[in-house]
Amino acid sequence: MTIEDVIKEIEKYNPEEVDKVRKAYELASKAHASQTRESGEPYIIHPINVCMNLTRFKADGSSLCAGLLHDVVEDTDYTLEDIEQQFGSDVAFLVDGVTKISNLHFNTKDEATNANIRRLINSLNDDVRIIIIKLCDRLHNMHTLEFKAPEKRIRSAKETLNIFVPLAYFIGAFQIKCELEDICLSYIDNETYNTIEEKIKDIEKDYKKCCEIASKQVPELLNKHGIKFSFRIKILNKYHLYTKLNKGYKLSDIHDLVNFKLILEDDEDPYRVLGLIHKLYTPMNNKFKDYIACPKTNMYRSLHTTVFGPDNHLLQFQIKTKTMDDVNTIGLAAYWKLYREDGKTKMQHELKLNYQFFNTLRDLNDVTESDSVFLDKVKQEIFSNNIYVYTLRGDIFELPNGSTVIDFAYKIHSDLGNHLHKAYINGKEVDLSTKLNNKDRILLIKKDSSKPKESWLNIVVTSRAKRKIKEALKQ
Image (cartoon, rainbow, N blue to C red; front, side):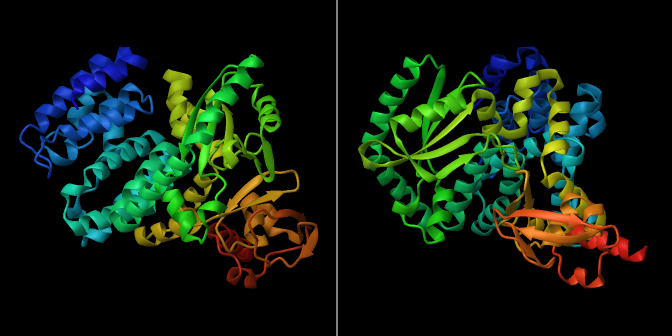
């Protein structure tokens, strides 16, 4: 891959930034001129690939330049001041955000790693573009992991799976999440990876006729009703299939092995198309999800329905608009495409307003001094297998597994937690210490005379609830 390949992609959506990107490439090429990768390739190949990955997100000019320059300050004699002088404060800010703190500041490598990961995660407070650049950087590094020593491959794969994959999920970057997951699995458990790869080939062969028939019947139906659309058919990614099989599922139990993704142009069409699909193929009543009316907590929106499709095969349809598909595929980065110059501001606003993990992250950072403890809490309270519960009006909330009614109350509002009096789960009154289950519907009742008890500190699991209870007990 060359810089010209990258320029061709940029010209498709952001031609006015080409000169600035070329200038960044020239500086990066000069700075890294004497350096090579462990593969033996010239080092500049890496920033070129990072920049190409960023074009998949339709990144803005500053991010593209930062992608090319992201290792210059860390690995060469150029300074942040040099970057700012030539490319401005915005590019310099992004480069600084992805530059690691020197190991000289720490006693051990683990300390340095924890501090740098915490710094990266907390960059969400300032600019989500830093995370997106780092994800693109990590993606290319994972694609070239074969040139690392075996122990480094495993360490990088585990770190990616534990930190970067959840980050990609939480900002909605599903495409890069799946790609990273599959690469990680290939290094962590190569034998299983190869087995899954063979299973996917078998699935492709088994579903070939089903997909061919559906690819004719569905377009005929939608064209007949004047609906503008595009579609693609996708099999579960290897890691997702691996996790399901690991939980004891058989292939015959997995209803979403093959997804028929329908992307519609008109915002009014998804529910209309759902009705048409249900007339064409009989739906499985218990396999319908409306993520348009009730988006996931990373703002994924789509209608999901599993039907008895052609050739006696189950087939999942995912019905969404073009805008929904963009957000579902590249997450917050879709706002670059939607709003161009104002994309950065829109991303940051949307992150703080609608992405629930953001406030939890901020709470954890405020109350945790140790970098290692911070990362442990992030993994436990955000990156773990979370549960999703509802208020009676259908608002969805994400909580760590093991959370109680009290945790939920403080998740909604500290005043509700401090005056929590009664709770009902699925219509039945329960003790306030009751642990919540996935999909519970909860009604909370407060009373001014009700106060937190010290015993609650041994019941709750979230850092926010513990902090708010301690504050209330001191008053």
